[in-house]
Image: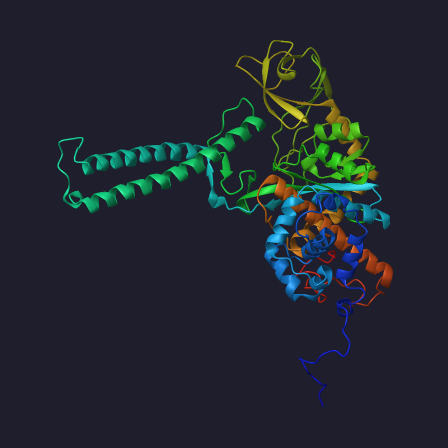
Length: 564
């Protein structure tokens, strides 16, 4: 009635471990892909002297396969090599301890970027990552620290003074007790009863020394963090006074604070990726310590060129990258930028009806064109316009004088003597000037607030309205946003496991390399088995994909329909 069941049954002939792993198993595919990688940079670090080390190729296979399966901890990787068949197959029945994985990743921190580059190279040999259209975006990844292990600059200054005072008080108290123990009190006061005995006096002195040591340790930690914050602000905001609200983490000083209404305040790193829009292969990665994406394009273009040896034809990005710096970086590299010039909103925002002036900020005495805003009907919202609509009245204002300070137009004069000062700018898009002082309106009818738009930015906005650019940008969300979903929800990488910028950067390279391996594994399975016929998954035509866990165990939880 039942099949034979014997847990202690021996095999007549020894069986190879590979016989327990199916032919199309993901561990086999990842092993084959890693075998094609050039890991000479890893082997170059070994001199051949001393005890034998584990083969770097084996260590890379285990680490990458663990990342694809959502196992990032060194202890869990070591346990998997003892208990799980795919890991035992990849390690060849070797069982490195967890410290071996930690030391391997620490020793080869720089070479982890080579692993990512090799995944891109192998992907391109498979016909992926054609580099026609590349989308770029960033995501905030939590650092391995807590917002409760941080302090603001103002609070650190207060705590520093407070601790210094407490240390001085305890030192004074200890000195007094030392003097009393020697029988030479400093003052005429009488010793309290608890201190009249030598044992009690010694106990009080020991307590004072312990309190001093505790406060000195805390003071040293605060002073170190305060020094790091001052160095950081000196580099990022030279010549400016440090704001009292600026924060720094004691656990990871190189992480940056990021606040969002829906999520609160966290310490994060800004992880950047460039994705081939056709294959969703990551072709460039970078990590920055700024929460803004506005200055990331130049560095990402360098990373793409370093990884693939060529630049894409088009670079697609959202409004976070929309500024003159992005335009100049793309023009210098010979890449066509397809970037949103404004953030997408479901409802029109209420915008102050201020006249918009178009001109070149970089030229002194520029010609400014004033756009007369049409009257807004009752109950309607004023729409922002940066170029005159057809039929609008455009009056040319000439004779404005730009007053430059260190090469930047910080003020301007109206031909009739009205003085305007710069009060706000938006990353090279436009500057807002406000009239200083009262008085009657000038003859040319200059308003109180002037918005001067850079001519380069105006030309860039017109280019983005081309139909082919709109079509490419429309596909951006479905090409790069799923990548972050697959990394965070699919692979389970929600926060970094290392501390320090260089260590975190190495970890991000491994994560992106593991993601590329998953994409290549899927590609290889499709080539081997062919696409599934319609209805093979039991769904009718047009039926939505249910959001449920994969039965084959690729991911640990429910993911989007377009995940791997």
